Amino acid sequence: MKDSLASSFEKIYGCKAEVFAQAPGRIEFIGNHTDYNAGFTMGVAIDKVVMVALSKRTDRKICFASIKSGEVVEIDMDNIERQKREYNWVNYPLGVFKFLLDAGLEAKTGFNMLDMSNLPAGAGLSSSAAIELSSAFAMSELYGFNADLKTKVRIGRKCENHFVGMPCGILDQGVSGFGKKDALVFIDCKSEDFSNAPLPSTCKFWLFNSTKKHALVDGMYEARHNECMEASNVLSGGDSRLLREFSIEDLESKKAELSENAYKRAKHVIEENSRVLSAKEALANGDIQMVGKLLVQSHKSSQMLFENSCEELDFLVDEIIKNKNVYGARLSGGGFGGAVMALTNENFGTEDAQEIEKAYASKFGKKPMVFTCSAGDGAKLV
Ligand code: ADP
Ligand code: MG
Image (cartoon, rainbow, N blue to C red; front, side, top):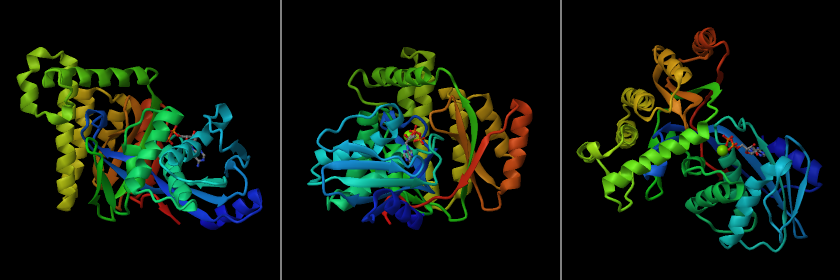
């Protein structure tokens, strides 16, 4: 991939790239809707990446090109503004550059940039975080800017939240930054601490994308968010502690003061936080069977308590966990459609996946999109 990117770079810009960096996509492993409740979550960086190449220019232009389009987008570095419509993709590296400058990166001249990817974009694998983190690594290196990993992760998220305008949590950039081969990334969303939990190299991930997206997904996401805030307001007596701070006993003692929905959402979040901690412990002990059980419990809780699952995802989980090579499966991501993630051993293969596709197709009249990967390294120079 690097050789191919290097030769395309020379063709497009007529000079050699000086710096290369890559960053992976991610899958939410466990910890569903816990992030904005200041809780715990875990993700896996996958072995599919966005790679970027950069060289310095002698003027004050910054130039962006993607292998996909080949077209070069030229921007004056003294006048960085959000790009519209067909150049929307430029906002990811552009916003990262802007916030690196704000953080103290000194650039006398601009740069040329080209990116390449084997990570599907817009498939819920966070290609956006991958392009942000690979850009942050390459730009910091090109200008000799010494930012630590956490700073780069935060700049990636800031770009996505405040430049692109997508209000994602820290999972996407945190996992793309802190990922490690044969490991998961554990995140404490309150302290924004990241650590790794070991995963046997024989474990594989399979994603079954229902290709369904609920028409009202943004509104439903907001409703869940509001119900969680309603519950934490009641539990904290208005002192703005989030659900992370409370136990099931705290919740039960205030049940009478809560609407049924607020109670159910809070129960999911509080128990999900415990499941993430249990999963971390089970991984440390090498108990993958237990991890699998927790994944299924997480799904059932989304189904029954948080009510962000749907018929398609429930069907996929039920079918997938019938297979003896599967440790566990759950909906991954916001819910209301989207994908189911399965954790399997290495014996789970294409034929197993096809059986599930067939069962799904005979019930819903279309096949799910299937994707497999392993746990890969986080962002790095290459
Ligand atoms: P996801 O992050 O789940 O893949 P998003 O909608 O958040 O989905 O981000 C996808 C967008 O990120 C694409 O539409 C594109 O603008 C940008 N993007 C992702 N990968 C690349 C890439 N390799 N080159 C250019 N832009 C990219
Ligand atoms: Mg994204």
